[in-house]
Amino acid sequence: MKTFARLFSIFWLSLTANLLQANNLPDVIDFIRGGVVAVGSYVPTRAPQGEFRGTGFVVGNGSLVVTNHHVLPFPLDGSKNERIAVFSGRGKHASLHLARLLVSDPVHDLALLRIERGPLPALRLADDDRLPREGQTVALTGFPVGMILGLYPVTHRGIVSAISPVAIPQNNGRQLSAKMIRAMRDPYEVIQLDATAYPGNSGSPVYDQQTGRVIGVLNSVLVKDTKESALETPTGISYAIPVRFVKALMAEAGNQ
Image (tube, rainbow, N blue to C red):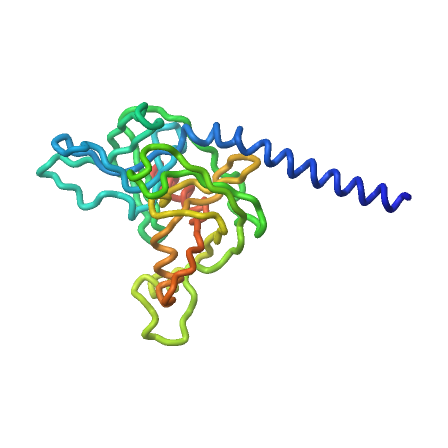
């Protein structure tokens, strides 16, 4: 009888924890959504004037935006007064914020922008720089497929499926790309996810489902090119750059 009671107690605690987590996610998304932005460009003579290429999220004092380096619209067309632009809000209620690049980290495919008009709600970064545990439940919010679906943030959920190196050594030197060689010179670990993501999700915050704290930045170009370029059929697995590199970028910007 005692054994049954103990097993039932364990089962109930586990079920309660799962229900609390499931019920907490909508509240977390409500908090996250205001700090998730689209990143692209603005040209006053273009139709449409604003176009976005990927996702970013607000950090710090509400005037800083983190995104992937490859999302930035470089080189800018100075003859057309092209500017980096950040788009906040939702649907027809979107707001345009012109921005400038503060500092970038092409090695980890990260960039930090400052918007001219704000502040916007800032997301919280994970306190601990240690990598998340495999099996940890996470979510990501961003703009899959970019402007095709409009400025309506979409959330996907999943787990941390593995912690793996950014580039895997190949048996054949002919399989090595320039990006893979650079990555192996400065190896670091990335977060592998089983959550669905699309090109427009690049730069999306990957966060803990229970706390909403950002643990990484979704990346669909740099990591796939370094890990999967030797594969005839890419796996479709998603990857995230650990948040400690975001903190380093913010510290670099603060020291300038």
